[in-house]
Structure formats: C-alpha cells, structure tokens
Length: 631
Image (cartoon, rainbow, N blue to C red; front, side, top):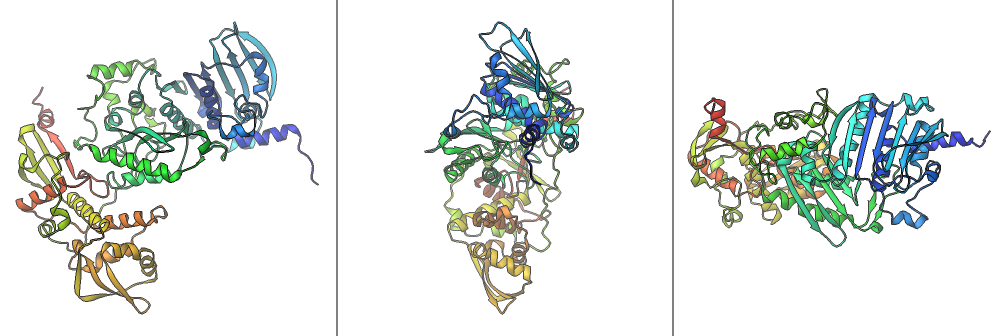
C-alpha cells in the first residue's frame, strides 16, 4: 500500500542527500562563512568530525530574529527567484545546508551582527530549537555540530574510520586555503593545528606554509586571457611532482571544482617532463561571467558545466606550455633538499623564518627550518607541514614503480644516428636560453658505470651527470615529433618486406592505430587475414630486428584517456624512442659531445620522454660538505 511519509522522515531523507558525512558539514559551513564576507575562518574537528565540528568566522553574522529561519529548508539570503540560479556568484545558495545538518546532528549556533550589542546562542536538540541565550562574542558566527547521524544509525554505521573521514576534511581545507589567499584560514584536527594561512600574505607565501619550501622553489606563474576567460595561478616545474592528484587544484569564479577534461589536459602537458605514474602540482584560478556557468547540476556543486570549454582548454595549454618551456630547472641531484635560489621574493632565510614564525602553528612553536625543508614528494613521503603523528593527513602516496625501459635486442649505433644527415636539424640554431651550459665550457671527465657521463664546469665549480640513455631518448623523441609534425618522417625502404603473422589482438591494435603508424613512417599491406607485409620503417629506429618496435606498438596498452589521435601518436612515439642508446653502451668522446649538443638543442632537454631526468648537477661545495672540508 502506498502512503505518504511523515515530515520528519522526509527531512531525514533529504538531509541524507545533502549531508553525506562530516565533509559535507564542513564544506557547507565554510562556504557560508565565505559568502558572509569572513576574512578569518577557523575549523576544528574531533574524531574525523563524527564527534564534533566547530566552524568559527568573523563574517557579517545572522540577525537574531532570522536564525530560526536560517535553519528551515529552502531558506536562503542568496537568491530570490529561479533566474538567480544562473547569476549567483555565491558558493552556497540552495537553502538546504543548515536545515539538513539540523536533521542529523545536535547543533549550537552562536552569532552576532555589527548592530547588536551582544551575541546570541541558539541550542537545537533533535531538530528543534530548545533555548536562546545572550553571550559575549565578536561579530560573526560559530557553528558547533556534534554527534553526527545520531538519528540515522544506519548512515552512521557506514561512515569510514575517523582517520579516513578526517583525511577527506583535510583535503577540503587545503582546497579552501589555496583558493582563498585573502582569507586567514586555520585548521585544527584532534587538538593539533595542521596549518594556518594569513590574509596579509601573498599566494606564494601561503603556498610556502601549506606545502613547504620544495614546492615554493618549484613555482612557475601563469596568467593570460581569452575572449571569455581570464586565467592565473601557479604550477610546479619539472622537479616537483606527486604520487597522486592531491596537489591539483582548479577554481572557477572562486569555486573549487573537479573537471576531468582539464585534469587530463594538464596531466598531458606534463607527461614527458615528469616521471610516468607521477602527477603535477598546480593551483589554477579561472574567471568568467556567471552566465557562462551552470553550477547546480551536482549536489556538492564541485562538478559544473560551462560554455566555451575548448577555448578554456586552449588557453590553459598555451599558458602552461609557455611556462614549462621558459625556464626549466636543472635537478641538483640532492632529492630536492637544496634551498639555494629558493627565496625569489624573500631576501634571506631570516625572511623565511619571519613568514613561518608569524603563523600560530601550535604551543610548540613553528617547525624548524630543517623540519620545513625536509624533502617531500613521491620518494620521500609527505611534507611535515601536512603530517600528523608521522603520517600524512592526506592519503598515502601511490607508489607505483617507475617504468623502466630495457631494450632486449640490438639498437642503432648512437654516433651514426645522432649525426645522420637530417635537414630538420641542420637549420636549428643553438639555444641561447638553454638551462645547459655550452659544451665548450665543459670538460669531459669520463663515464661512470657505462651509463652516467661526467662533465665538469670548472669556471662555476660544478659537475654535470648526464644519463646517456635518457638523453638519447629525449633527442630521438623530439626529432621524431618534428618529423611527424612536418609530415616528413625519414623512412627506410626495406629491400625485402618483412612478413609478420598477427594475432587477433594485434590486428585490432593495427586497425585502431593505422593512421598513427602511417604518420610515424611505417608502410605496410595486409596479405590475407592475418599476414602483414612491412615495407618501410622510420629511419630513426632502424635496427637489425625491424619488426620488434612495430610489434611493440601493436601490443602496447593505451589507456582509454589516451585514445585521442594526437595523444595516441605521442604515446606511440615515446614507446618507439626506447630504441635508443642502451644503458651500458660505450661512447667515445666525440659521441659524448654530439649527444650533449643534440640534447642542449632540444626544446625540453632536462627529462626523457617518460619524465626521468637526463642531467643533474652537483657543486664543489656539495662535495666539500660531504668530506667535512667546510667544518
């Protein structure tokens, strides 16, 4: 029999759709604080937010007579009619948040407006207002939420552990802190201060406090406009990457959002300059007219739609590519521990100390410089500013093993490939802005372990270590990409076609990748159902086993997100470039010079196509410190 649900049941069902857990409470309350004009916000949680959540702000407050109305469903100060949904710039506007919280938790609201001589404390029990008392407090609002889901034991049972729920809130609070540099934000978890930003500091200075000096040193600014968008922000350079996406932040009109297309585009721009399986760091702020957005398509409003998406992608691609190519940083070989050159806007380490010490970290004071500059990233664990009891507030890094390319068969002789007549290369001018010094300034010292070339720069007391395999991969990759871009791949006509028998999976790969293979320079015909005649191959990758690379390209796994033709072609070019000089091949001094000069002429010489470093640098002072000669 169908029957109408009672009002309390309807409220709890609706509340469960809006308040999915402690994270939802914090998100809704902080967004309300921002909309109320607060420039100082504090969030405290206990037991992952299950036991207690306290959000305090110095916003405009709520007039005493309007507080009960604020906790009713569909009551809001931010819109008046349906059309306002398409014009509102506020973060929260549906009028369901406070009512939903009230339905599933015990709530105390303390608030004061500027025209009131005192504040008032409103105590709600089991969804009903129980008492109102005057209290002394500053202008603003404090929301205390306790015993979440006490009235929905099934929902309470399915919440994750205290740590997991707390981690979700931590990630959200970092997003708020990054996205609102003009608001002082404090976050406390189980009585421990996790971070505090300051409204009077710049975005870069707040990023220093949030993520440490390693990231601060890697920051690259981006800024630009298109007809419908203005973009600004920061990205990490080639030396900084993470094991997951926890430092990818995107904001549109101040709202932190998730956008798969932009995420894929950004990660694609970094794919050949940071290691495979690693992710870039970026904080990007997009501004556009409100009429270009639709933000009410998802309950938590983190996924939105907007007009002119291709225009925005093109703008981001242009800005990020330009920033990455402008001034890449040469790795120092010390696992990101060096702070030399760190203080772009700060004149000394004293300035750094002044910034860090200005934040109320805890009763124990600010972390020491040594603690703050502990290396962090995929190989070193989380930054201490993010840690709690030795563990990160953020989820553990995804320590996927770096892909290692070991060639099984013979490869082209390096010297012949690097000096082969190539009209594309002959017209290239030596790069004046290369991060690598001219070869004439260096002295060839030798080769370590038949892999690492040592080049000494005596004038600057530096030594460069060049990975010959990674360097040759980068040279081949860029040369090959130029040839394909100009539709001039240099090919070798085989005297006798190679006959290859393909299985069903390889035939499917051939059909999917035929266009890309032809653009790379392969020419072939199918004979019968499963026999392929390979007639021409790219000259750059010619080897005694001409079929090996071709079959590898058919067999390689290409994820769904790489199925776009341009991405597939690039991925296949990377794979083909593993047919380069092998680790362990012996090079003569002339070959070393040829390799270095070719690498220095590359558009991006500091990493192989898979993101591993090609060159690192160490200084004489580093060695003197190791041998205690400076003591």
